Length: 575
Image 1 (cartoon, rainbow, N blue to C red):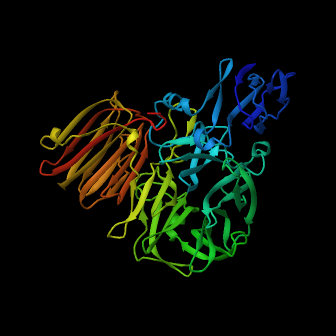
Image 2 (cartoon, rainbow, N blue to C red):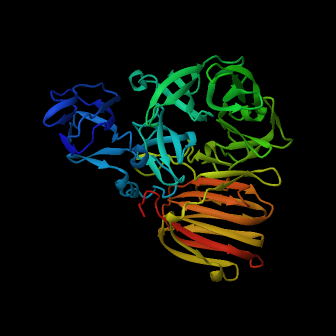
Image 3 (cartoon, rainbow, N blue to C red):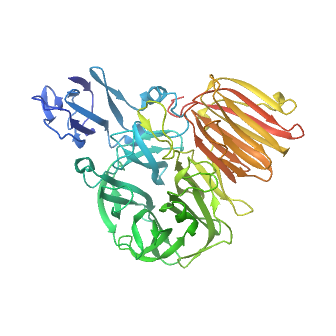
């Protein structure tokens, strides 16, 4: 039996998911206080079940777990009154004990894997995909995310939750949403799919999300309904969930998900966008409501060109819609679509236009591809004062992690959105706080005849910012200890990100004149921002986790004005 004695004040809550491996005459897990058993799991199913218990005394708790008879996929505890400062403490099985990993131990936990990023958010363990419910409540940012607590692969969807004061340093919260039914028991998929936060003028926050009901086919025949969840006082748990929309408009199939909700002051009613397909064409649907509970279909806000369905596009996912100045921006992913010329997939598209009286009139321009990589998907934005901030899932379904790991999936850097003079949607990273910077140096003097070579001490996380004039050719190569490398090249007005044998030159974008370039490297994650974020590229590489050499080559007739190199520490550090 694994055993751990914890000092814990009254009101401490415990959550765990457990399944039995075989029958046992002893409890699979038990809590004892002063030698008396106060909670015992005497038997369980052969699939993971959720258990929760609250400690109602100030005496230490003894936890005993038979790790031979039962498996625990996730186990943690927290104090509701202090979770906003301390987060949850995880309990991890090791040898003959349970190891407590709280906020003070997170840096050690996150450093144990070389491919763990320092700046990009990743879950404590298990699988993570789309960002959900992004919002700022008081002084705290809230990041919810698609989460599977039982595996590092996709499965029945829950909502994980973390909070931050600066969009970089995070505290893990309890799991926020669970599937309506135990899908493990049913041998089915589904669960609490993606959704957004709605913040009313009364100061209350509601979360609208899609519940995929138990399904036995990933691609057809399932049913998706829309629900609204109200959080409890401490935002650690859901207080209530109700279904608010299930009826499908004419021509809409089983894909009907990912609500974006806001209140329209012009019409004095609530509006909801949903991703779907209409007669097999990927589409965005608009619904209206007088109260946020009773929804009716209004019209198809956007319907994709036939090119998308002809090349595998099944439906729109994760639609987002927000104003920048006097323009509105529609952002969407089209699941299943593969770009015929390049083979790229998991792409996000943006469209600007006017929105008035519930009607969106797109500008007369082509869809903008938001990111020329394929690891920036399921973007969600929120308002932070006058700024629009967003995160995306930094992964794609085709890539597989090459190393054993306790987790899978990461978020992009937080990005701020703007429109440039040409009407392009631009994204720039919210700068990491100064507390994350280990060192920062300007290397202009080291540039000689169009070349800069820097030797690093196995840096895991850094950025290089370049500015200049008359740049016609540029090659930035990052090399690891064993010769692994990634190159960002600019030639003949094309900006290309590649790792030989992994990218096949497909990750490219046209850039007329290159004047500014920022590259972030973070344990194999690359995020590129060119010309004030008018062109961005994101890729997740698993063949390189540290960089030892940076080589920059550019046409000698160019004039560089900035070559700023910054090294970063992990955001889980207490420095």
